[in-house]
Length: 421
Image (cartoon, rainbow, N blue to C red; front, side, top):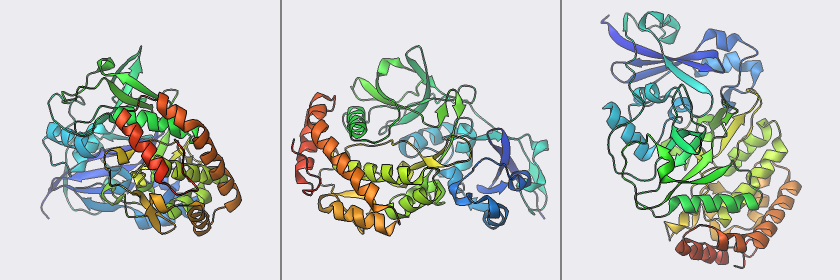
């Protein structure tokens, strides 16, 4: 059999070996779990899809190893950036943007959650990383400088950065970022002000959010040479997967469902997400109620982008899953005036202006959730929004045209959720 070149990355979680990603010369990848990880009854949680420790080995044996072409397995693919930042990295690495193994090599030291992907010396790559693939010429991974030194026009980009003395620098393996910084968009105006204001309103209505800030652009250091519009601020949100300098494992629901980012709008419903949260979360009822509150707030704020990747599970103790704080809540209708739909089906509809309390009752029933606490908290949420949002919006930094559009959106909602602005 002809020889084949292959390199590998070692995957670790809280210092424990999880497995390997093998990258072949023709863009084929293989994700395998280490036998030691599968056999360890005290292993840290890797994914909600393998949450039951009693049949972990049997289920893992059916799922792994798994081979893919170009794209990595969804567990890893969803850790990589999308859109303009992916294009920037691919250009820097001189690879196709869909060729994900080199991207993982580049970003493996500062991924979302607690997984770390590190290059393995050629002589240290174990046979278990490949399975029965004949004679392999094993090679070391060619890693490159993390900082991109070139220009690329694009839409809004986000960077993992660490904050020191009021300034922000790109994170790396030695100093992972503890903030996500979103620079202004070259396509849509005033996105940082929109997201900051929307998240503030969400918090007032009862949504759990991380710390957020507006950061002057001159406080950002070592950014790639990207072209930015003439706006003064970036939006900053503290990473909930970092705590006291340590990594906290997390996964979004595209990872949970082994779905690729391209399918984030159609591979599941809000009922499916809610059922998984209620049945698996350490505090199931509390998290199901919080999901209901967020769903309502997304409707109230005209956010059409609460797709699979914008709902996440967090493992604060390394084992027990809980619903992660909210992120990426944005008044998207400001940029898509004809927008009338949220991202996924709920009670068999996506229509903002048709949704009533009855739809939430049906959603709870279809997801096998406790109806009474959910409806009670939804009513409390709309009462808070009606009492607090009009003044808060007036005083927020959101652009005036966006404020006017949001008030118009409030007036168009079903009477159960209409807000008098």
